Structure formats: C-alpha cells, structure tokens
Length: 278
Image 1 (cartoon, rainbow, N blue to C red):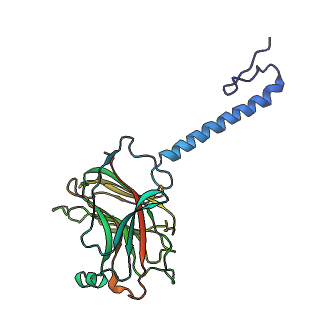
Image 2: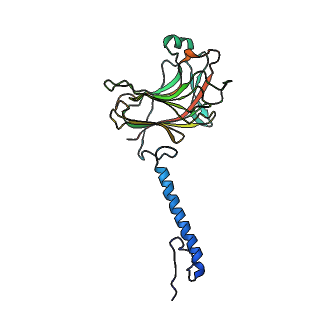
C-alpha cells in the first residue's frame, strides 16, 4: 500500500513510488522555491521608484499635442534632420553666433538656440520626455568654455507664491569628470551635481516628472536613462498658466570666457513628448 508521492511543479513527471525519487523531489521543490523568490525580487525592483528601475507612473497617461516655436532671442541654427532614420532636431551654436550682441544686452552673456513648447500649461502631474545626444566636438583641453542647459521649464510668473518656479538640466564645463547639473528654483533653490555623466555620441533618455502645486504635495523628478538623479519635494508653483518647456542649447556667462576658445557646439534632440499623468 505504498502511496503515490506528487509535487506541485512536477505534474508531468511519472508517479514516484520508491525512495529513489526523494532526491528528484527535493531538487524540484528547491527549483520552485528559487523561481518564487526570483519573482518576488523582480517585482520589488520593478515597483521601486528611484535608483535604477522606474515603474510607469500611470497606465492612462494622456499624450498632449505640442506647438514648438524658436525662442525669439535665439542666435544659432536649428533644423530638422533624420538621424539613424528617425526625425530629430539639430541645434548648432558657433563661436561667434550673436555673442557680442548678447553680452551687450544681458549681464552674464547668454547665447542660445532653443525651441519652446507654447502649448503646455503648468497644471496637474506632467511628464516631459525626450532623447538627447552630443556628437564628438573639438575641445582640446577636455573642458567646455561655457556650461550649457539643454532642457529647462520656467512657467509664467505667479504672484504671491514667494518664488519663481524653474527646473533645468545642464552639461557642466568639466563634463568628462562631473555629472549633469540640475537646478531647482523652487522654495529651496538647490543646485545639484549628479554622478551621471554625459556620454559623447550616445543617446540619453531624459524625463522631467513634475506635479505642479502651490502646496506641499508638489514634487519634481529628473530622470536620466531610467534612473532618478535629482528630486524636489514641496511646492513647485502654478497649477495653471503656461509651463514653457524649452530645449536646445542655452549657454550663459559667456562674458567670462576666452572668445578664442569657445567651442562650436551641436546637440541633437528627438522623441520630445509631453504627457499628463494626473
């Protein structure tokens, strides 16, 4: 009257009727336990928001229509190209593009070529996404003469909130050794140097996820290649009015540079998308 021994992961196996099957049963149960722990570990990582794995914030994200215009004070060149078979924006600033006029007009010598999305408002929880790439450039000393911002959001000024909302991500002068810089001009007004460095010739996935709010439930995340590199929690500003996302090249403090060393700079940006998450 020996009983048939069956085990949950071996339904297709022949019945085990002797003690010789015990090692096989133990191995099968061990495999089941390993698969179970792996699934738990993977789900835990996939649900984490932060360091390396970011789960989608909303399954019902609404993609919004954009309307891009060249920023009026731009002095460089912008054109639409196909890069590796896909549409992209190419931005170029040369050494002498409007530099003297800009320095005369603004105290810290700004020089830019940017597109502005005039269709967006600063309301609810938004995700602004794009891909960004800097090709090889001529920088003999391995440093840029001027840092540059390639993505920034500066909504309409709103009275009685006590600050001017603004967030940006930039490539620092010492880009081979320093990571991207992030500026949060919210009530805490922070400048963050991250550990994520620019890779010349490679595409980076960039996301700003922002909950626009005048209250403490606001937040802003800056995400590069799937990892959050900077976060602000607390008021972010207007819950309405224009958001004004800008992308391209924005160089500042040109009056501190050696005009003979300022690099010609090209940036490619593609797959710009704005989504309303909530």
